[in-house]
Image (cartoon, rainbow, N blue to C red; front, side, top):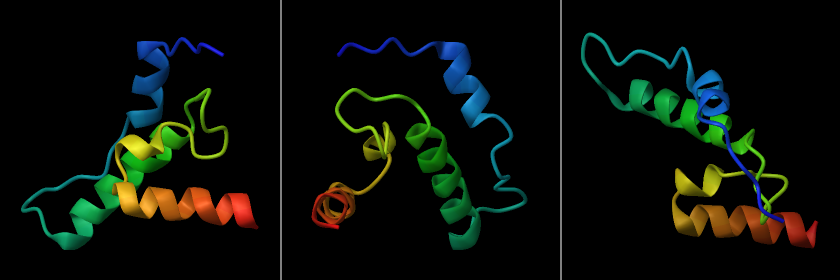
Length: 73
C-alpha cells in the first residue's frame, strides 16, 4: 500500500506551468491552480486512486464533495 513518488516524476507533471506575467489576475491564478491540481491527480496515491494527490491543492470541502460524488455515483 506504500507508494514511492519520484521527484523527477513530479517535476515532469508540473513542468510548463501557465505564466502569471505581467501581473497575476484571477484567470491566471485559476489556470495555475488547475495545472497543479491536474498534475497532482496524475500521481499514484494509495488512498485515492481516481484523484491522486490533488487533495493537497484543492479546498478540503470541495475535495470531500468530489469523493462523496464518486462513492455515490
